[in-house]
Length: 145
Length: 145
DNA sequence: CTTCGTGCAAAAGCTTTGCAATGCG
DNA sequence: CGCATTGCAAAGCTTTTGCACGAAG
Image 1 (cartoon, rainbow over the protein chains, first blue to last red):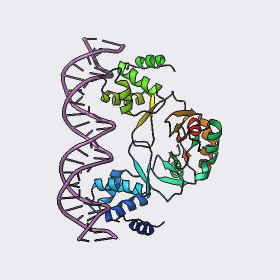
Image 2 (image 1 turned 90 degrees about the vertical axis):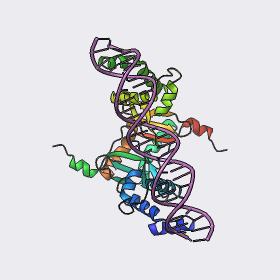
Image 3 (image 1 turned 30 degrees about the vertical axis):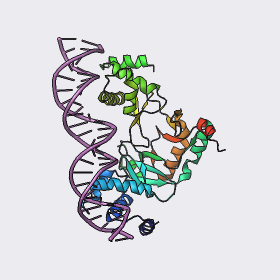
Image 4 (image 1 turned 30 degrees about the horizontal axis):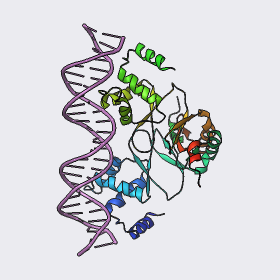
C-alpha cells in the first residue's frame, strides 16, 4: 500500500492526519535501520523543530495501534520500530556491523518449525524472526588479511 | 559446573563471594522463567531484606562480566536474564502461555543457517536463538472445544 | 588490615501524563 | 466549530552513581 492510500484510509476512520504523524511515519519508512524513539525525534526535529518527543512517543503508540509499525526485539534494551507491510509475514536479517536490515521470505523457516514441532511438541511462532549476524557486504570488508 | 566449583573458581580470581551474589545467582539458576532485575530483587528480599535493588543491578552486571548469566532479548522492553552454562551454545523455546522455557540443541538450526548463507550471503549468528510459541502442555490445555 | 562490595540516597535516563492551546476535518 | 491531537512541563519508572560503612580474604 502506498503512503497516500494509507493516509486516506486512516482519515476515513476518523483519525486526523497531522504533519507530525506524517513526518514520523515517513522517517520510519525510509530508514534502513530500526530506530528508537529518540532517533526518530532527532530525524524529525530539523524539519519541524517544535515537534516534541512526547508526540513521538504518542505517535509510535498510535502507529502500532493502527497496524502501520511493529516493535522489534533486539539486544540493547531500547525499543525499536519497523514499518510493517500490512500482514505480510516475513523475517529480518540485521547486520551487527552496519545495522542494515534485509527482509527474507517467511517459508525459509519451514523446516525449522517442523523439526521443533515433531521433536519437542512445541509450536514455535515463527512469523517474525529477527536474526543478527554479518551481511554479505560486511563479510567482504572484514576479510581477514 | 556445580555452584560450588563456580564459587571457588571466582574466588580464586580475586572476586569476593558475598551472600548477595550467591543469593542473586541462585535465584536466577533456579527460576523456570527469565527474570527482570525487579523480580530478582523481590525473590531475594524475603531472605535478606536489606539487599538493595542497586546491588541487584550491580550483581547482574558482574555476573554478565564473569560469564555466568546472559541477557535475553524478549518482547516487553525490560531486560531479562538467563543462567548461562559455560559456553554451551543452545537455543530456547519460551512458552507465551506459561512463561516456561526449554533448551534445545544447537544443531537444530543448521539447515536454516545454511540456507540463509547460500541464499543471501548473510552469515547468521545462531548461537542463541529465542523462539516464542506454545509448549506441548499448553497446547493440550488449549485444545479447542 | 586492605580493599572490594554494599546500603542508602540522590541523580540520571527514558517514557508517560495533565492541561491549556492548536488545528484538522 | 467541535474535538482529536499537540506542546510544554511535571511526574513516574527503571537504572546508575557517589560516598561512607562493613565485611571478605
